[in-house]
Each structure stands twice: as structure tokens, then as C-alpha cells.
Image (tube, rainbow, N blue to C red; front, side):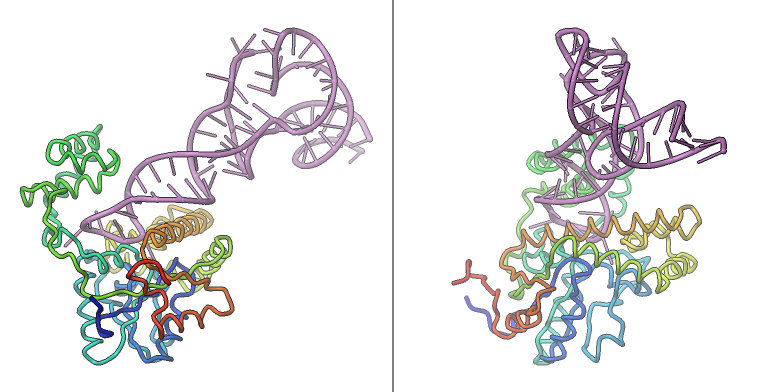
Length: 319
RNA sequence: AGGGGUAUGGUGUAAUGGUAACACGUGGGUCUCCAAAACCUUUGUUCUGGGUUCGAGUCCUAGUGCCCCUG
């Protein structure tokens, strides 16, 4: 079944520091569309420098959504993102405009394209706390995995013993629903919209250079002060938002427990790793148009993609 | 210039004369409500030339690079 134009969304993604923001604003300005942020950390208020969040000045009048929609000490989730983002998209479409999703969080993209099977089994803090306590114990990870082996052998078989994060989630779902994680009913099989995806990329070493340069700029812009301000205002260092790159590395530094050199090295290292993981994710993502962000025709290719739907190969391989 | 020391993956280190190891990095991957998270995994090394020895990263020797001391 063909979807109507109003049911199509454009997604510009790519690793951190690949130039998504600038290109997206240029594109949105030229074609009068609205941007929906697809970034798991730019959703937090007061986290601006470390998340490289586009500021009102650089948006050049292009409406942005899903930015600053949560407080740093709030917990957020993919499911919530999916729900809120789809609302934004619906709203944009209702006004007769196109939505351009921009961001590097692959998991969020997948949630939109392939809706969560366990859509109605949300997190249970009590169960998690209980199971996480076990995970910390001597041999606890093995014990959790053993528990899952009993409750849901299929899922246990595909999860590594050390992957207690997912082992716990699987146990949580089993306990909450009484049905094994692997046998949860698929609630929603079809995504609400069709997504036309373009991914920015470039030579790895050049990307890493850009990453490092950007971090130098972040420090110069006052990253340390931003982190200090968050901590001083009562945001816990354990908060989910503070686990973000650029924040978790800065906490020891701001507290005087790490030198600048150590912090700088660690931040750059973690960001490189992150960029690599983002690329890995996108390689797995089906139907993606890859665009070398440093090529002279990068913008033209994106524009062509946006106008003609190049890369929209949902039927399989392109002709 | 003289004396001493040192040389092991990209980096930092380990190895009673007996299969060269560990950490970090690098590369690849996983992902269905914490995802900028969490987890899995690969790769690659004895400075060069001689010598001793069944066998040399290890001992001897020369060269080269680096470090320290003296002048």
C-alpha cells in the first residue's frame, strides 16, 4: 500500500559532529519544513553546550520540536519519545507542512519505524531496583541470567550473562505480564509513518578530528560551568541525563577529582566511541541514503533526496 | 667527548634461557521502555647485524635511537 505524502517523514541522521544541524536548517529554510529533534539528550532543558543543541539564533526561524521537553532529573524513555514525536509530526502535517527529523539516536529511529512490541509494559522502578541490587552482588549477574533461563529460556539464550541491563528488562516484563519476554504479543506491527532516511558520513579520521575540535569549542564555551550549574541546582550525578557524554566525564572534573587532561582525553575518547556506534547502528538500518557530508555536492544530494524522495526504497533495492 | 642505563603491538607495561602476555587504543558487532546507556568481539609486538645455545625478548658483541651523569 502506498502511503500518502502526508504520511511520509524525512529523517536526517548521522554520527555526532557530522554536520546534521547546519544542513538541516539550511534544508528546512529552503523548503519551509519543521524540524523534529531525534536526539536522546537534546530533549533535556539546561543541557545546551554538551549536547550541541541548536540555539534559537542558529535556527534562523525554523521551528524545532522535541527540544527542551524534559528536565535533567526526569527520566525519559524511547516509548515516551515515540509517542511525543509522533504527536509533533501529526501536528506538523495537520498544518500542511513536512516534518524533518534530525538527530543521531538510532534507537529512537527504530522505535518510530518498527514500533515497540512491548508497548504497554513500562518500566517498574521497584522491580528494577530489586534486580539491580542482585546484579551488583558477587555472581549476581549469573544468578539473574539463571532466573531468566527458567522464566524465558529463549531470551536467556540470546542475552550475554554480563548484559544485565537487558536480562533485567526481560525479567521485568515476564514478571509484570506473566508471559515470557520472547512471547509477548506484537501489539503494533505497522509504523504510523513512512520514513525516508538519509545518513551523513565521512572519512573516519576526519570525523574524529571534527569531534575533537568540537569538544575544544565546548570547553571554551563553558561546558564545565554548565555541568557545575546543573549539579549546584540539585541535579543528581546519578540522573539519567547526567550519564550523557560531556556530562558524566565532567562531574569528577567539576568536583576537583580529575585533571583537565584526564577529562579532555576521556571525553574525546567516549565521543569517538559513540560516533562509531552510531555508524554501526545506521549500517544495520534498512533503506538509508548515505551522504558524504564533506563532499561538495552534499547539500545538493540532500535536497534532491528531500524533493524527490531518493533513498525512499521501502520496496527493497532501488531500480 | 667520556661514563652509565634503556630498547617488547599505536601507547603504557609483563614474561626462572623453553608456545611472547596484560591494559588502553584501533577495527567489527549487538540492541524492542535507562540508548550520548549497556553489552559482545577482533587485530597487532621482541630496534638492526653478528655470536653462544638443542632453544634467545632474556646471555655476549657491534651498530643505531632515546634517557641520565660528568666535562
